[in-house]
Image 1 (cartoon, rainbow, N blue to C red):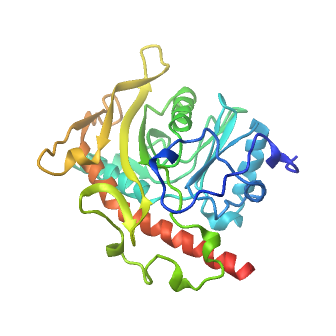
Image 2 (image 1 turned 180 degrees about the horizontal axis):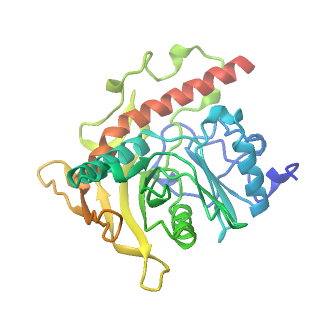
Image 3 (image 1 turned 30 degrees about the horizontal axis):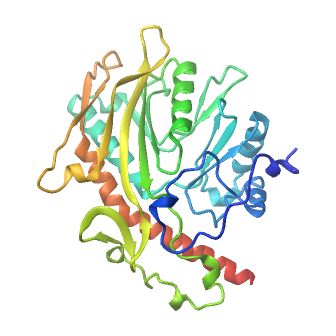
Length: 344
């Protein structure tokens, strides 16, 4: 079944883009543009190392999604880096998240700490368990079992998540929303799904072309050796802007929004409250401000009522992760360069 599956609904990626990325490139395609070799790798259970972003979305059938899920679930697949695959029924598409970024880590850590402090203050720490990147099976007693791997899950003694948090950088919002709606529809114990969608502008593309350096020494690559966090910095004129390394942009300008999904009075998935936008420049400088995000936990075990999260906590998490994201991308480029050189 997999033979030739990678031919479906795909076009080659344009490899002519190089150098510094311009804002005119800031158009996100509905499906990832992969070349033939990259598609073969994906359908073999390997995330292509020369694909520049942290997530891929392919046009697939449900059967192809299941085959991909099996390929990427193998212990030897891609060094175990794959965290999750999603299937979007409306678009008939599969999204593959390659790796958790520092942006994910900092946002999950910041949110988790707020929840822990709240439970500790209410003397409820022993009643709730928080999991990161753990696998849950929703609807395990039905033919349509869903494999859920949220960034953060908060469970009561029943071991079923009543709250899940998903953070998306390269992942598309509608894929995350599809997952939230499906979980709320099929898991009676799950009361809330929180989505934090991070946007990068312009969309990331490596600022240097790998092929230009395959026959050149490491010293010619415009990435310091060794690379330190001090080498990854924003422009002085725009401290919340892109992160540069040797004058080249490795992380674009980041913004985000926070959204909570629960159920309406009819029991159907519904957004709760308003979407909260997070623009980093709002939280730094002379006009700094912070809003309070309220998560209503009324009715949950232990009567833990309401949690208040300052939006500045999330903004600080994004702010502090940018240099680490740039460093990660530089290391990924160097790893790919080294692997390609060994084959030439």
